[in-house]
Length: 186
Image 1: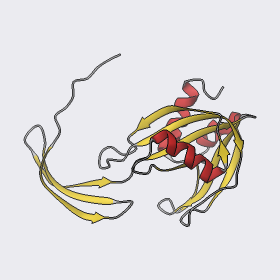
Image 2: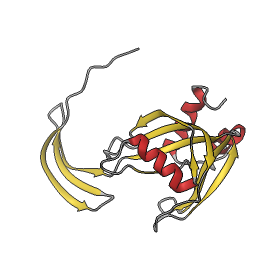
Image 3: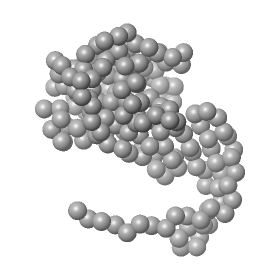
Image 4: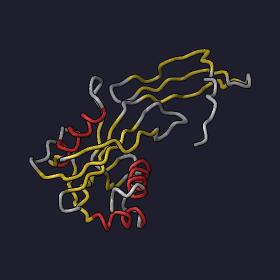
């Protein structure tokens, strides 16, 4: 496999927090690039890392959730997902989020992909897991900011939902396609 030499990080000359909230921090930095050029106002977005689960039930249904996404201005069909708590391992967050958002618990779960959904301006990482043998063991346990419905889709229809634009979350699409490529979806 091809290996690349690491690139030197930009030099941070000044760094000021513009917004600092629980789920969002925006920093304005003046930075110097490797070539000596400077960017006067670079805006870095820091947010919590999150996890998502591509989950199959025992009868080969994919567990999805459908919810309104304000940035999109409409409904989004997605994998169960959520924020990783500061002291939590990504796989533990994946188990917790799957149970909270869908009521499903998986017999097996394995790492699928860790990715940077928007590496140009955001420090956030997304950790995807593949789960199988899931059974519904509880009702949803949503917090006050969540309003979603569980949707079960036959695995044979999953790529069609991507193709016809019903699944639009780019990082979720990447995880679905990678799982398909690896033969995890049959």
